[in-house]
Image: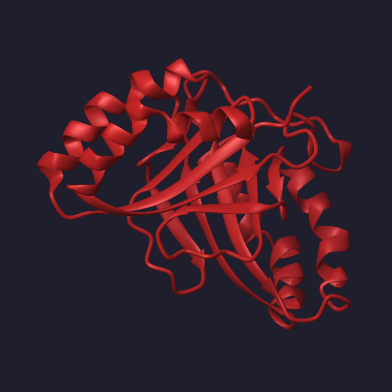
Length: 213
């Protein structure tokens, strides 16, 4: 089974009317290439770091090839020109690492109820001490498993499509709900691991509500 391709983007809108024209027209081009919305401007909360996030968008495609084909297609390039008249965007592509459908640490991932959107924790991590960070990485997956989370991407290759955002390492984790994601982050168990991580890395982290479809 092929690995999925994901697009993450943050758009700062300066002309709402122009951007709304783009939003109203973009879906057919995404659907034509097998894509779906993961995140579509839902609520978000910065958990760590200083980056000022504005409007988060996430797309999922059957693979990176389909994602690249969509982005490079004449129909999307015309829509991109429309978007640029209304917003500045940072955009990256990344590939699923492992099987995103597999639960973290082999536990059974919780399935969101049909009426409850998932939530995504997105972390950009710059590691300063590869040996010391193991005190965090060797144990953090167990905390995700308890929350019913699953990895979508964990430190794989990143392609910068647009903008100035140059993440060194990205981790994307899906939780069954907004409450589950925040409950995991605020737990005593995770906060103890966070203190280890902070001694040997720099992190930007946010939680964003997923798109229900």
